[in-house]
Length: 148
Image (cartoon, rainbow, N blue to C red; front, side, top):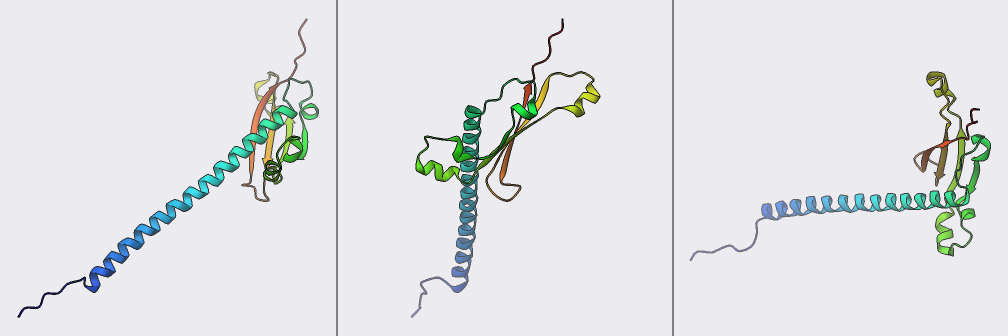
């Protein structure tokens, strides 16, 4: 009488386990990267919201003195929103904003012509690291004296 074997051998079970574990590792890596991108996207959205709030409260306008007129000292983002919900205030608590203006004095030596543009640095920070900040550079035209 011939005996037939049913079931899997040990080698087949080990190979199936290895293939399954590799698939799970790839899946978990993808989920981790997705969560990281979602966090970065959320931070980017919050920073863009803060830039919008700052533009509403401290608009950038043509001026004679960029350093003094456009400069905003370091302020907490919660100071920018008076009518925010408590949940939104909690989110904005960890962000700070500052704006500085500077003349393009280095460019004047090479170009020899003052085009009336000045650089405005808008910076939002949310942590102690240098990576935890977003900087927005803008150019502002100053009021040029009219030629008579």
